[in-house]
Image 1 (tube, rainbow, N blue to C red):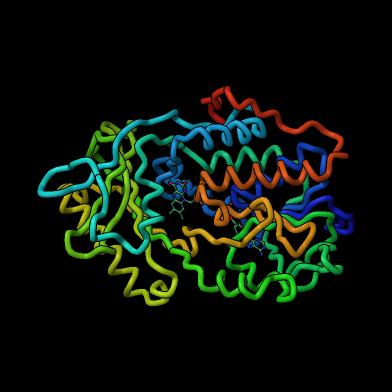
Image 2 (image 1 turned 90 degrees about the vertical axis):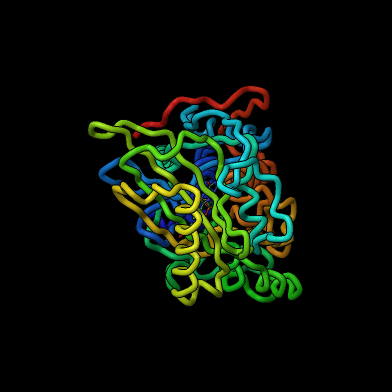
Length: 386
Ligand SMILES: Cc1cc2nc3c(=O)[nH]c(=O)nc-3n(C[C@H](O)[C@H](O)[C@H](O)COP(=O)(O)OP(=O)(O)OC[C@H]3O[C@@H](n4cnc5c(N)ncnc54)[C@H](O)[C@@H]3O)c2cc1C
């Protein structure tokens, strides 16, 4: 705890993938970095869970295979010394189940779900699929040489005119830093940033901004159900909101047979989430659609997991300078994926890289060498240490 008496070069608030990327990129530049995370473990929405059948990840863990994403993966790879694992590009058109068959998905037509933007992210022609994003978290944790403060929440910003002196932790502990980078949920900034530094118009807009909770159903099948590599869109022909997206992972050997997992997500708005009956109804709808498309899908289930994640998807426009810096506060940066138009994991990578580039661009005196990024090379395909 004595380390907190130092002045840090940077305090990173939030130890999800975004916070860990920003913290490591600055750490590797030789900055003294404090990473504050309110939970016991780091990882945020990329935390894994150890099960009898191997490591269980949150959700689908797919990212659109675009040039921008590949460029940002090189940044990530450079931090990990070339050990960011993914299984390469997969090309497979999304399919939907209609009239007893799977057909290419061409659009929602008049039955567009209220969370159409969230679901559209997953309806990609080309994707990168990741085996274990939680292994990224372990690897990033391992290489970080700064100070990590788990089970601590940043409760206030310490202002000095239009600059930050640092942050207040758990309402009592003061920590001083030259730069503060916030990597938590964008909506929490409504309570963290003092009124006089949050333009009233923006504040109102952000307060009204809709974020979505995800309801995910992960299934461990005792026998393979499908060999399809496509993203599946399952929906009712009557109810616009009764729709889920998901996929089957490649089967892996288990006991005498093969085990397959499948992963399905739907969304619900944060207000509806307050009533348990609403999430129950959404999950029943997902099951109904799954059973319709794959009548035997629930026959031999080894294990199933339901995860409800608040504020898991959505985009918040904070009107940041260069997409990263708080306009009214000179040394306050936002590394949250929710402010990046690429969204989700693609947004995490892009936002972390932008914050890093902007910060080191401003403070050129930094002694160490930045992670090197070669735009034309391909990210490595080897595995991080377990
Ligand atoms: C079920 C599910 C499936 C998903 N599937 C995919 C997918 O297939 N592809 C994809 O691209 N994306 C997917 N996502 C989204 C993706 O996981 C997230 O976009 C990404 O992990 C967000 O990372 P982050 O670091 O920005 O935020 P988070 O992971 O939310 O991390 C933020 C961290 O900040 C901490 N924090 C917040 N406020 C404070 C504070 N004041 N003080 C201290 N700590 C604080 C929180 O505890 C948290 O650990 C999925 C998400 C879910 C929930």
